[in-house]
Image 1 (cartoon, helix red, strand yellow):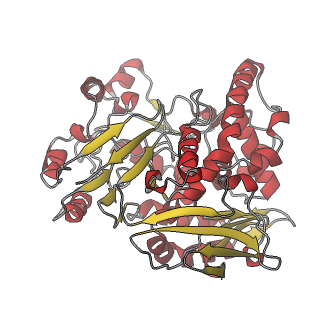
Image 2 (cartoon, rainbow, N blue to C red):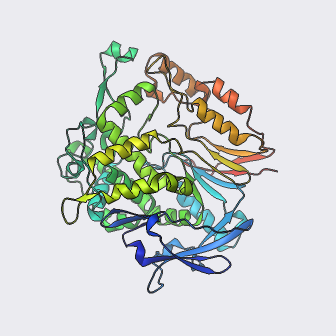
Image 3 (tube, rainbow, N blue to C red):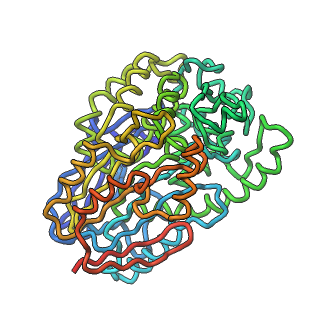
Length: 505
């Protein structure tokens, strides 16, 4: 996937395998999100040997000059080099990447490790895959300086405006006009009357926020905000373009100034590491899957939560915007053929119907936007498999859940019966398999006990009561089909993210 502020028709992809081949970007694989932003989900068929190193570069069509920054290449290499293989013996794994967290970004350390391998031509030590298994962004926990940066990116790239329904805000432009202060969005988010919680009934607190995160005072809302967050999360370019170091808060209460200052200092470290993060992702085949924070905390935790969220037009739109951006920025690269078959025509029609209310601002067609959100919420093909050796099976434990028919606030099972049957079919006859579940299959007993207690009190959202053992019959039935790896080694790589080395012999 390539994000470009230059028209893709002026660019070409050069690919070096046994020879150099040059490709233009087909119009059907280019999506214009705004007057100044294109998204290119480019795929090309290439016959591989068992293991092969492929080089690539993106160049100007006329001059042949590279448009990629120099620091995206490793030393001694004139191109980006990727090891393509049908094996999955050496897998890097990570999840939960929060820019304002004080811990160092572990992807930077992974880049240092890969850099040493590539520079020393120790290709056997180069990872086959990078699996990012949930919470690639934290839509519900955004730092104040990050939200202010998002607003600047929206203006810089003229990202689309959208109208809101059942909200005190008329449209997304009001989010950035100064009317809404930083750290004050939680009062804008929808609420509902919850009569199912014994604890809340006892405390007379039936009015409940649909978005249950304790840190949602800067929650992302519009499609353009989600897109801008992804762009800022993986690349340093826009941080430089908006001059992040000089960024100052405009609409902020005095009580939040200290928080702003601390968050900005932490974010400086995050931004400093982004050139290495971008380089890592350019060199390692990377696959992703959502968990809850890519959308919002406790996403689809109970049938009561779903009923409240999807029956309210504003919360439904916010969740839809999260999935819209996930489709474009994560899901498409996991299974390009499936996504292209299911969404290309609809996306082309959707963005062809985006109108301009001025020479620079694009606006969504409200009815078409609502229909697209509904289609996204009904979609059931976010899961995927990689036909590697061993096979990699990536589960969707968020949108295909078993819903309780007896209690509205009972935690939903992570996969419904149809999803479980499909999962079992993927496992039959295999000697070994890598299973990716965003929710832990093997939890911590103490935490699971607390989750069970919170559920009995009628408030499962307090401690995220979602794990496989909350529904013992499901994993027990599933484990009967899981093959046993003859050799499994795990090694800690860092406190925030870790590496799993799988050797199947």
